[in-house]
Image 1 (cartoon, rainbow over the protein chains, first blue to last red):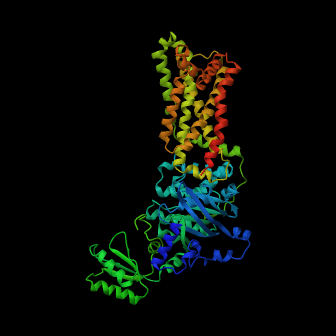
Image 2 (cartoon, one colour):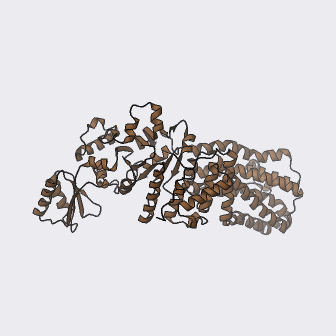
Image 3 (tube, rainbow over the protein chains, first blue to last red):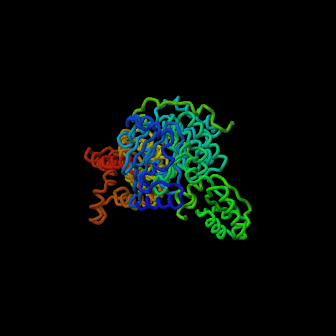
Amino acid sequence: MSIQLKSCAKWNKHDISNHDCSCAHNHTSVPFAGQGHGHEAMKDTTPHDQTVASAIRARGLVKRFGPLEAVAGVDLDVPRGMIFAVLGPNGAGKTTLIRMLGTLLRPDAGDATVMGHDLRTAPHEVRGEIAMTGQFASLDEDLTGRENLILLARLWGFGRRDARARADELFAAFDLSHAARKRVKDYSGGMRRRLDIAASLVVTPGVLFLDEPTTGLDPTARQRVWRMIRRLAASGVTVLLTTQYLEEADQLAERIAVIDHGRKIAEGSSRELKAATGSGFLHVTLAGAGALERAARVLEQALSAPVQISAEGARLSVPAPTAAAANEAVAALLAAGITPEEFSLGSPSLEEVFFALTGQSPETEGHP
Amino acid sequence: MSTAPRPATLRHVARPPRPSRLSNALVFGWRAILKFRHVPEQLFDLVMTPIMFTLLFTFVFGGALAGSTGDYLQFFLPGILVQTVVFNAVYSGMGLSTDIGKGLFDRFRSLPIWPLAPFAGLMAGDVLRHLIAGGIILGIGLVLGYRPEAGLAGTAAAFALLVAIGFGTGWVFIVLGLVIRTPTTVMTLGFTVLFPLVFASNIMVDPATMPGWLRAFVEVNPVTLMTTAMRGLMAGHATLAEIGLALSAPVALTLALAPVTLWLYRRE
C-alpha cells in the first residue's frame, strides 16, 4: 500500500497526470490506457471472447519471494500479433512476471490466460503455445548449434529427418549456417542470442517471450535482433519482451507497460507515454559540470518543474509548457551568468518519461 | 539486407503430433551420448580415481591385507566397481546443477514435454558412463590377473546390478543438483557423504578386524550390501537374499526421490 501511495505522490508531484489518486491502484486507469485497439476490441464481449482475442490476459498477478513482493498485482492485456514491451529498471519484477506467464513460476495470486489457456489449470497447454528465451542463452554449450536445434525439434515431436531439415532451415534463416557445426561454447554473444531465438521458433509459437533480448549485445548485434523481432511480429507471432532500454521499447513495441517495484505504473504506446509526461521538454547542455547545480536551480525556479540531470552530468532536462516559458528559462540562465552550450525544445525521451513516472532514471536504480 | 533473417524463418511451422514419453526420454539420452562425443575428457575424470585406487590398493596394501596381491585383487575388484559407480553419480549431479545455472532447464521446463524426461536422459547418460567406466576397470583387472569365477554370465549379472546401483544413487545427486546452485558444492557435499560410506564398508577390507561399533555400521551400510552381492555374483555364489539386500537401497531411493525430483522440477 505504501508503494502505491508513493507512486501516487510522484504522479502529483510531477504533475503529469491529473487523475484521482484514489484510483491509482488500478494502474490501467492512467489517462491513455484503454485507448489501444486491444482494449477497445475487448470491451463488452463475453469472458470467453476476451481470452480468445488476446494473446495474454493477466489479472492481479502476484509473486512473493519471502517478504518481497516481486510482482505486486499486475494486469496485462496483450493483443495477438503485437510486440509488447515490459519496461523497467533492474529488479522491477520484469523477469518474475515473464517467468510466471511462461509457466516457470507459479503465481501466488491472480489469474492469467495465455492464448486462451489458463495458466493455473492448463500449464501444459500453455507450454504448447509459447516459446521462452531467458536472459541467459539457454543452450547446451557442449553441443553444436545444430545439435541443439535438432534436440529441441525432436522434443517437439519432429522425426529425425524433419528435425534436421528444420534445424538447417533455421540456421539458414538466421544467417548462422557457417556456425551450425561449431559448439555453442565457441559462439559470440550475438550469435548465441540469435541461436537462442531460433531455438524458440522450432515450432512457430503463439507467444514468444523474450527476457531482455539484447542485454549485453553490441549495437550491431542489437540491431540484428531487433530486425528479427520485427519480422517475427509481422508474421503474426505475439512478442512479449522485457527490457531496461527505453530505446528498445521505443523502437520495437507498439505498446509499453512500465513496471516499477512489481507494479505497473503506466501503459500505452511510446507516443502516449510521452504525451502524458508533458508536451514539451527543454534540454540544456552546459559546457562543463561546474555550474550544473546552479543551472538546475535556476531552471527549476523559472519553470517550477523538477529538473532531471543526465547521467553524463552536463545535460539538464525540464518540462516546459510553452516555447515562451522555455525562452524565459533560457533567459534566466543567461541572466544568472550561465551560458548554455546548446539548448532545444522537444518532446520528452522515454528516459524522461520514466523519470517522471518513477522519480528515477532506469539505469540508476535506487539513486533517485 | 543479407544480414536480416530471410522469410524462411517466418514460415509458420505447426506443432507435430505430440511425441510419447519414451520418445522425449530417448532424445535426452541422445543428448547424453552427444556430450560424451564432444567432451570425452569427462571419461578421464570418471576412471582415473578408480584406476589409481585399484593399482595402489592392490600393490601397496594388497600383500599385507590379503597375503598376496593376486588374492587381494580378487577380493577388491567387485568392490571398486561399486565405488566407481557411486562416485560417478556425483558427476551427473554436477552436470544438472550446471544446466540449471545456465538456464537450459528453464527452456526444458517451458516445453510441453514429459517432466521426467530430462532426468530419464541424465539417467541414460549415467548408465552409459557406468558401463564404460565399469568396463575399463574390469579390463584393467583382467590384465592384472583378476578372474571372475562365475564367468561371462556372472559378470553380466553383476553389471546389471551395478547399473541398478548407479540408477538408485543417481537420484540422490539429481536432487542435490536441483537444490544446490553451484556445481562444485554438489561435488564437495557428495564426496563428504560418500567417502565415509565407501570407506566404512567391506570394499577395501574384511570388517572382521574393525571395532564392534564400526562393524555394526559397516554391516548395514548399503555399500557393504551392494559389494557383498557384487562379489557373490562375480564369484558365482550370490544368494537371492544378498541381491535383494543390495537392491533395497537403490529401490528405496528411487521410490522416495523420483517424486521429490518431480516436485523440485516444478516448484517455484
